[in-house]
Length: 408
Image (tube, rainbow, N blue to C red; front, top):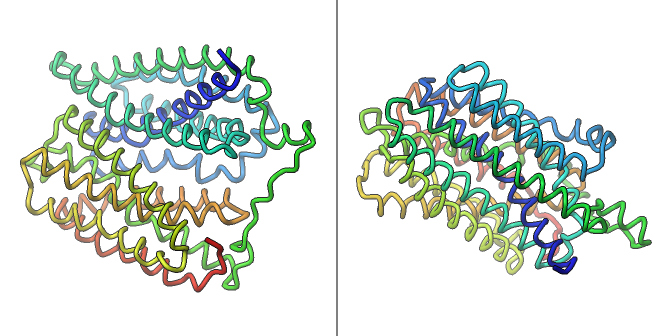
């Protein structure tokens, strides 16, 4: 097998490994906490705490990278994740143990993400490798939100006397998967030593110039304060909708939910939803490239209102048809992916993007924590109406950005 082909394979497997534990922390843990009997506010509050490693990443990242190489961190965190997943299987149903181990998973995932991003940086210049990274991350989301949830659902049908036993078996499965990934990466990162060097280090050794990523956005006339407000406000309402919508789809009709089984949820959100999100993101980036930031910012910001509209409508109508529910999820995820592409694009234009990513994580943390409290106070239908009203914050955030001298 050629070195180039191996480099593509490890790039794909690394980014796949990057995505799976993130889905476990942010989605599967939410479903599991609810099945363990926690309230909506408690469940979303615990998941919100899992955003802390990403909120603080701009401060701890440099110290972590000085301690070990990116290759060492990638392998070490994967091995530790194997142990943590096995620990989660043993920890159920003791709540405090599960909480501690989920926090450990979040921190290991964040460190693993830093190592993978650095290892992948050199390949970013190749369109084929950028596409490999993107598709691998989306495949991880399909496996996490789709396959793993459906697996747990099928196991719960078999072990109805012990619903949490299905989650135990799922964690054993994920631990085995990560053990295989660890050994694979141990081999290929040794074989492809040239490709596994961080981009900056490789450029220094080869004499190549290191790309300058600064753009016109670094010198915005309105200053960084407006951009800080934008990064905090633009995704806030969607952070609220994102977690509650997961529980709305799976909660019983007696509590105002749609009552989807884990298998149906895996199909609707983990497959249809992820495909729609991917397509929406691709369309958003293409739209920005063709029309430019100034021409399309309002259209993309308006699309951020669509998820709130969709969930507000099905919150009241309570559709029973899986096809209708799938169509609604497809619509809102397509619109969300399209609108959020504006946020991600602008984030890539600034020189202080690590701090920008921390602000994004802080906005997601706050929205997630608040969502459970509001849902408990209002119920699903009124909550989604409130979230729709708060989606207007995205328009306010865009309005704060004056004309920016950005090239197409």
